[in-house]
Image (cartoon, rainbow, N blue to C red):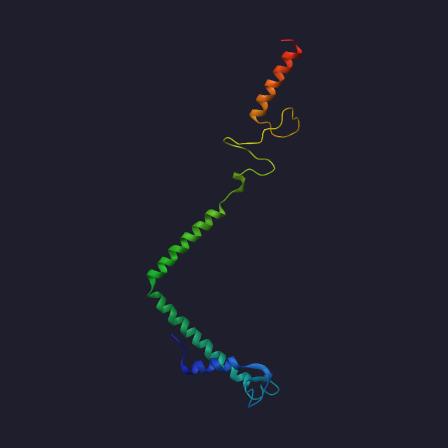
Length: 147
């Protein structure tokens, strides 16, 4: 599939049309300073129509060639279906299934740093901290009550 010789000439002429001043010897495709009166614009339109017809013809030929390549089209269609399914899965992702940074809900066996003994701020009290504080308080009560 390619352009005919006449279509190729039309493309070359159309490619040379410019907004410079018309000069029969040096710029025969210039639109300014008399180019329109010399038929440059009308000729450009004719070339444009010729090329549009060529493109339509090439597109029709490509469409008929494509109908013969149905197995390739089927493979491309299967790829498109797989890509669409992947996009659907991504669209179904629900952020509410995950903890926010402001208020997490921990599951499993989450880890946190153990605060220093006697810490009384709002940090997380780990089991190691609670056990150490329980032992410390038990000794403190025992010593206080003389036990």
